[in-house]
Length: 265
Image (cartoon, rainbow, N blue to C red; front, side, top):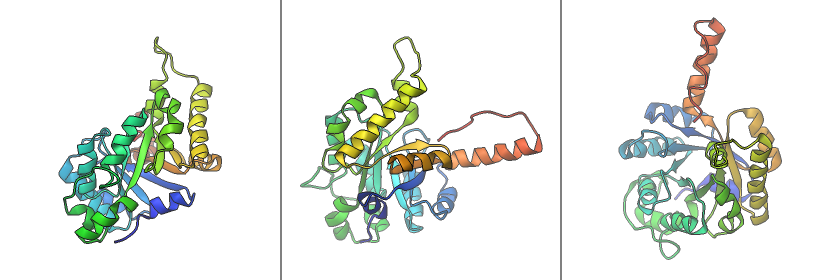
């Protein structure tokens, strides 16, 4: 059974920069998996991607030697079980605000006795080039578990959540975190307040020895955040890259006024 190189690299303190897949296109996924990113996350939370299609995406990514991850819609046992049985090599779980929510997600990703994932399915083993028996025995060591910190409550509970056995990395969703920081009258946090919240996440990661990361939009910010100590970093998405490239051409040719911020992830 092959290993999960992203999980191994994070354990060694090596930053891992990947991107999001939002289009649901197997054609695009096959190409993106060959660009050199070590991991690609199929976004099942905010994209209209169905289960059959997700399984094809995971297979296309794994066959190219890239690590397929799945962002599940929520930290539900059945959703986590289903993406792993469909061939994802790891999960990204949104809105993990409490220790109990974190424990539920971790347990769902682990076979007994560590967790409560049930035995079944064949695509998980196939995408690891393993027999079913090998996969059931070794999957707990290779599945990557990434929990998202996306609220002040999650930041307040960071030390306890990040210290739990089975947490391989933490990922900040900047948009959700910023919106969750709004005051009751709808006032946004200042840039300084938001950055201070991010630095609390980073500090908790360093304190607990847990790799932390976040979503960014430019290479310059990737380099800045790596220098600060962030390790699991997503750069845009294939959707963002496609739209931004098209907009650059339209702007250079002066075909039409700018359409603005059409897509981020």
